[in-house]
Structures are given as structure tokens and as C-alpha cells.
Length: 315
Image (tube, rainbow, N blue to C red):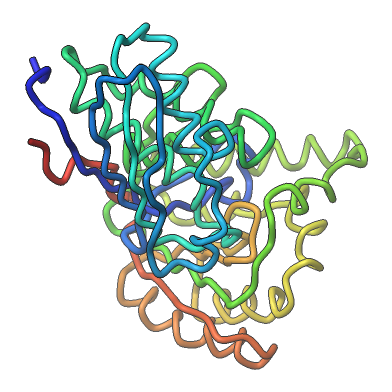
């Protein structure tokens, strides 16, 4: 029973949404930038955002009105669906840049619900927190997709449907490089280029790639992962929105990547490798490719089986 706790602080890690072949369905967390939420239990039956800070680009532009903020809306959803008599006050510290393709909007709401959960009289399971996080994420993206919030809640590689999170196996040798350039690409804009219909043959080929990718993951088979990690649907339409993308992807493949594509809605680019050493060797080359296109960037090397959101302290 946690009813005597009045405050909790939790972090949520960044993530790679879609993983190329799994649009709105697959994602994995990474050990890199993170958002931190401090939630206080208050007597007033409401949700308030007291402050938003942090070094992340765009943090100061986020709305303090709870219903217009991903974290605020997630806590509103939690309060209303749990019929809580009390409320929450929230402070956000943004470590994940906005519009980066690293799950910044999702991390805010996941960190908030994980912290708030530590203050409930009877804390909920991670699966039970999922709908509240989805409600929050929808404020930013305009749709309910869990490819970022699910891996943040569970850690590692996760398949996210509208109602379930399914953790997938990922060999410990698999490592990711995620490179975030000094560019901003809003999620809604990145989704707008996907509106036109796709030919059936292309969808069938993409489905084959997804099946190969999932089979490779389950078997720990690098060759099958490599064969499947090709996005034919989303990447070709979004790549023109990201200056330098083709060169960054080529740099990753030249250094032995199993595959590379756009992280989430972009502009970050991710690549998977068979070892940490290969990932660390490729990261500078991927950054150099963005630099040649005129953009500074930061590279994060992480196990594909990355961390999950956790409570840092509660009192």
C-alpha cells in the first residue's frame, strides 16, 4: 500500500519507433536521453503542471495546460478511469528533444504515469498503465499508437497493438546506434506524407520483410534479421524530409549494419549491428554523414534490449 507516499520521481528512456518494418507496431527502448517526471499527490481532484524544464530542444514551448500536454493528459486519464478522489501535480524535466524521432512526447507521459502509479493505494501493472500512456501520446501524434510508449513501459523490443503490449526476445549481442541531427521534424508532418494509398504488391512484400524480421529476432538469427530489416512503405516517403538521410544510412551499411532506417517519425536515424564494437565503430561515420549535409548530431549506442521506465525515488 502506497497511500502514505506523497511524491515520486520516475524516468522514461528514449525509444526507436517502428524499427523500420513495423510501422506503429514495433519499437525498442534505448539507453540514452531520458525524460524525468516528478509527481506529487494533492488533495485537489485535478491535474496541474507546475513546471517544464530541461536542456532538451523545445522543452520551453510545451503547454502547461494539462489537457494539452501528453503527460498531463495521461494523468487526467488515469485519474478519471480510476475514479480517484485526489489529484496530481507534475514537474517535467525534458531530456529528449521534441520532434527528434526518439519518442520525446511518449517519454513524458510514460514517466508521469509510472511516477503516479507509485502513489496509488494499489499500484497497477505495466499492462494496466498502457491505455493511460496511449491517451497521453495521442495528444501529440493525433492517433493511438504504442510503438514508443510500450517499449518504454516494458523495456527492450515490444510489439504494441491498440490493447496489448507483447515483449519480444532480442539477443544481447544486438546493438543499436541512434543518431539525432540538429533538425526538427514534427510527428504530424511526418505522418501526413503517408496519406496516399499503397499498391497491394508493395504491402505483401513489406509483410514478408516483417515476417522475416520477427522470425530472425525470435531465433537470434542475424542473417534473417538483415533480410527482413528493409522498410518499403514509410522510409521512401519520409526520407526526403530528412537532409542527409541517404548518406547516413549508407554509412551505417558500409560499417556492417544489419539494417538502418528512420527512427520513429524522424529525423533521427537508427541502425542495428551484431555487436557493440561494430556499433561504436559506425557511430562516428554516421555523424560524419550528417555533418557533410550541414548538421551537427549526437549518437547513442545502446543494446537493442534497452531499459524500461523506472521509479527513481518515492517518499
